[in-house]
Image (cartoon, rainbow, N blue to C red):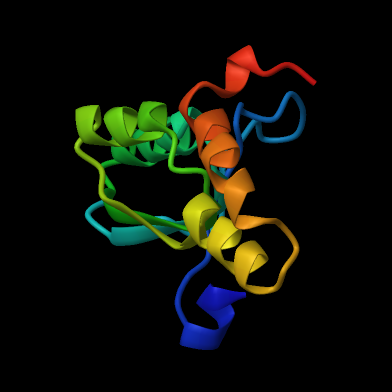
Length: 127
């Protein structure tokens, strides 16, 4: 874990308070006025990430950024993070995935426009 490697405290934010035990929504040591970087595996719409950010902010914690491993680059996420005035960065993204897949011959270059079109309106594509 990143916190372990950096010798920093680790906190876990649940989507909802536990229904049993102490009913915690936040697990781990957390103090007011701490500066926190939240780590996510994936950002799609950004809404669940921002829910967790708001839980931390309610505890008077300064969330300086959200860092994810991957994001799709959906405009909805860009807008949500901007509206919440929360910075975010991702290690990689959908565009980079497409470029790598093209470079490795996993997709043909002419497929790129269709793949990028999916990102613009994914709900309209169906499964």
